[in-house]
Amino acid sequence: MIIPVILSGGSGTRLWPLSRAMYPKQLLDLSGEKTMLQETVLRLVAADDIGPLYCICNESHRFLVAEQLHAINADIGEIVLEPKGRNTAPAAAIAALLVEEKYPGATMLLLPADHVIRDTLAFGVAVAAGKCAAEKGELVTFGIVPSSAETGYGYIRASVPAEGAVGAYRVQEFVEKPDKQRAEHYLASGDYFWNSGIFLFKAETYLLELEARAPAIVAACREALQKAVKDLDFLRLDSAAFSASPSDSIDYAVMEKTTRAALVPLDAGWNDVGAWSALWDVQERDDAGNVKRGDVLVHDVKNCYIHATSRLVAAVGLDGHIIVETADAVLVASRDRVQDVKVLVEELKKRGRDEVETHRRVYRPWGTYETVDFSDRFKVKRITVNPGAALSLQKHHYRAEHWVVVKGVAQVTLGEKKITLSEDQSTYIPVGEYHRLENTGNTPLELIEVQSGSYLGEDDIVRVDDRYGRQ
Image (cartoon, rainbow, N blue to C red):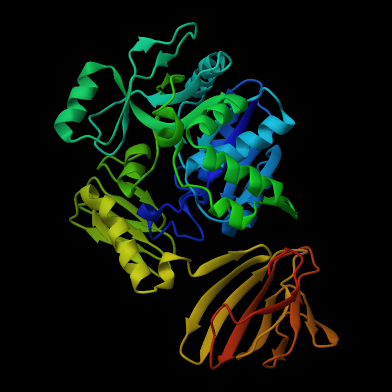
């Protein structure tokens, strides 16, 4: 049996402003109708003997991840919450320990949640070859057959067939991102492949190899699991134990040191969507070479990627540019400079700007809220509560709130009272009063919230009771 393990801990900062810390690229529908996480799971139908999936994700994304997996009826074995990112080697160790305990002898297929693979049939064939090699004790990585002299990827040299493993090659060398001249040499030789970051191996084999080379990682992960707690539908790792693990990748911790590393070529329309230019590469373009998403109007524009989310974006006389518009930020860049978006993100972090963390629309386990207007002493939000959902019972030290229902029916707890509000009705929540908002109906509840007070930060929330287990 193959147990798929989805690694969904990344932040995708190079796809800002669409991808943000609290809503990263794997949770967005960047390359199709489904999100990248969902597409990663759905392509598993091309492989045989697939068991329940395990997903390792940032605890801040847990409700979004669970919602997206449930939306496609994924067979979920466990959603594991990382309290802190420690790179791929510890994440794989956690998965391996869980898999080996429940499915002894099973192989694990590790998949980043944010890759595009167009040819699912070719993907399934490669996985089958990888499984044969893994069952013979190999640690398999999938090498992308290169289509160009790409300088943005690491390479793997593998030209000697792996003994007894049909379709697999012995890994001879891992190579860091090369310059253009060296990348052209790699392409011409036919012996080098792009490093995909996709792996297949027996859980027990990986743990043995990792323990021999990085025992501190295995020890920390064992302790983090021993002290882990079940939290609703999630497995929450012990924060102190997991954070004590060295941070390392599977490549550095194991693959570059082991004698068991094998490579299976993968030629399946792969792209890691590491920058906006990659989305231009993988999506259908018009006769002028443009990718246009949303409300876009152009004149004399060529070879551009233009993405509008909340308003009309118009462009004239451009060639080879990226334009991405969101409700609170607009990015304009030359297509050959999009790797530098991360420089802008770092500057936003230094300035303490919210735009690097969240969108104007923020997702919560109960629904969403969107800031419509704000100033020093007031803030206006549009709140949507899903059917059957409820906000926590809470109070605020510094702000009062006024709620006006615009759609649906709200049940409001206000101190010791419970009141029902229909459309066009409102209520006032004084500073310090305990309150809760619930949608007991079958349709979304929408309301306008007006906050006023000396401090309007989201951290001014004192929760007394919360059905989603938040502090």
